[in-house]
Amino acid sequence: MENLEGLKLMAEQWSNQGIEYLQKIPPFQLYAAIGLLLLTTVLLLSFRLVRRTKSNTVLLSGLSGSGKTVLFYQLRDGSSHQGSVTSMEPNEGTFVFHSEHAKKGKIKHVHLVDVPGHSRLRPKLEEFLPQAAAIVFVVDALEFLPNCRAASEYLYDILTNANVVKKKIPVLLCCNKTDKLTAHTKEFIKKQMEKEIEKLRASRSAVSTADIANDYTIGIEGEVFSFSHCCNRVTVAEASGLNGETVQVQDFIREYI
Image (cartoon, rainbow, N blue to C red; front, side, top):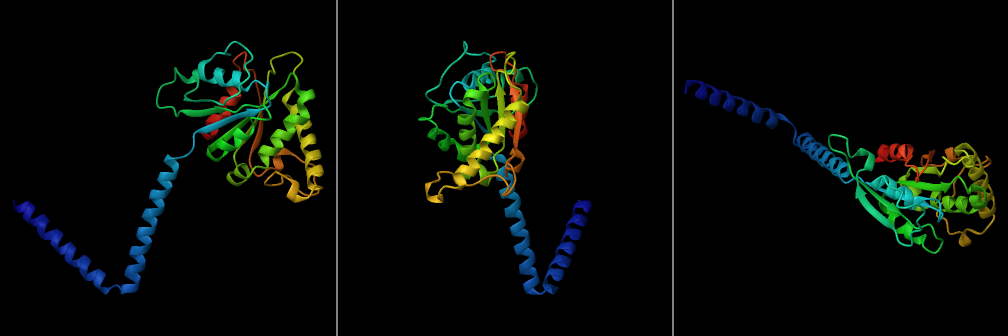
């Protein structure tokens, strides 16, 4: 009991000293300190809220036939879904990668969206871009040359999209089917697509801005285009959806999710 009384007395003394100290502080300084404390608290709470609500959406995009859907099922189920599949509607799923099932501990789920590559269905990509944390752009490394220009145009449209530019959404140029003997290397594909995008920059900059659908331009004025000139990060990787070689794709996604 004596100890409790002593503690109570000490608390009262500290309280009185605190009140006396506060009374000596000029009102405007006191209000400023309280305001700063409140502002700091609000900012910290906002930061924690933003971190908690960080998007886990990753988009698989690219031309029709590039292997996006096979890649989707390989990442989700560890299965190629019986070979080539053409999607007419987006495939969506929220899951941990099939290869991660044996891992212990908490693993964040990925919301993966396979966006159809058919030209008439590409506007669906615009619906998902505002919530995208990353984009995997899939290119067929086996049939690359006949589709090089079309793939480059599609990628150019993505890289100049307002959502991608403003949010600096990272993009992985995924060269699929590289396990095939006659497939082109990722270095060759990267170089050829940079050349095509450079041509697109030149041709579209010559057109009136009123006729250009793209939101932004990319590259550095007076220099030959390189993916390194983009405001967002663009990296290149190899994969094989049919054979389950998706490690580089998973590593890219896990960098941002």
